[in-house]
Image 1: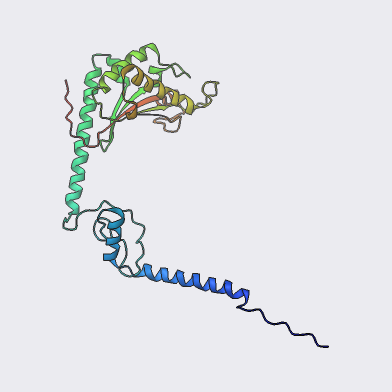
Image 2 (image 1 turned 180 degrees about the vertical axis):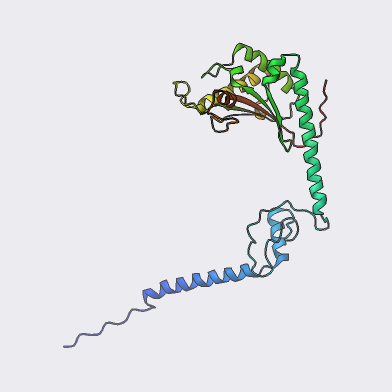
Amino acid sequence: MKKKAEKPKAGAPAWMTTWADLVSLLMCFFVMLFALSNVDEERFIQFAEAMAGRRIFLQGAMGQIFSDSAGMLPDNQPPQPPVPRDLEVDEEDEDDDVTEVILERRVHMEALAETFRTYMAPYDEEILAEIGITVDELGEYVRFTFPSGMLFASGQANLLPDAVEMIDYVAGFLAQFPGHRISIQGHTDDVPINTIQFPSNFRLSAARAEAVLERLIYEHGFDPVLLYPSGLGEFRPVDTNATPEGRANNRRVEILVHAPQQPSLTVMID
C-alpha cells in the first residue's frame, strides 16, 4: 500500500522571510543614500530653523555644509560663528581687528605687571628681584613666579611665616582686580619624593598651590569660583634638572592673572 504524499505547507518557505527582510533593509539603505545626495537647501534651512530657532547659512562663515555634487560634509572643517548674508567680511579687516584686540589686551596686561612692580617696590626690593614677572605674548595673562624656597621649607607645603606675610601683601594687589581669573600652579624639580604625606611630586606641588589658594580664600575673601589651583609636579621645568641651581628654579609657585574677556579697563600706576 502506497504511502500518501504529504501536503505542502501553506505560505512561503521560512527562508523567504529572511530574504525579504534583507532586501527591504537594502532598499531603505539606498533610499537614504539617494536622499543624502540630493539636498533641497531651502527645505534644509526651514527644517534647521524649526529645530534650532535660528537661521543657518549654507554659505558664508559656516562654509558650504553640503557640496554641490556629493552632498556630503567637506573635509570635516570646524564650523565658524554665522554672520548675516549681507555682511561682507574683508579678511584683511578681520585680521586687523584681531591684532588690535591682542595689542589692547597686551597693553592692559603689561600695565598690570608694571603696577605689580610698583606695588611691591616698597615691600622689599631683594624679594621683588627674585619674583619673575612675565606677560604672555598674546596678553592672555601675567605670570608671577615665586621660588618655592621663598614660600615653603623643603618637602613641606605649609607657608613659612615670612611667606604668609608676603602672600598677604600680594593679596592686596590681586584684590584690585576682582574680575580676573587667577590660576595658582605648583611646580617641583624631578627629584622623587615618597613620604607618608606626599607620595609623589604631584601631591607636593598640588598641596603647595592649595596652601596659597586657601590663604586667599579664607583670609582675604577671594571668590573661589575665579581661583584655579593645580599641581604640575616636575613636568613643566623652566630650567635644567642637572644642576642644583636649575632644580631650584624649577621648584616654584606661579600665580597667573588672566586677562578679562573684554579688556576695556585701564590700569592706573600709582
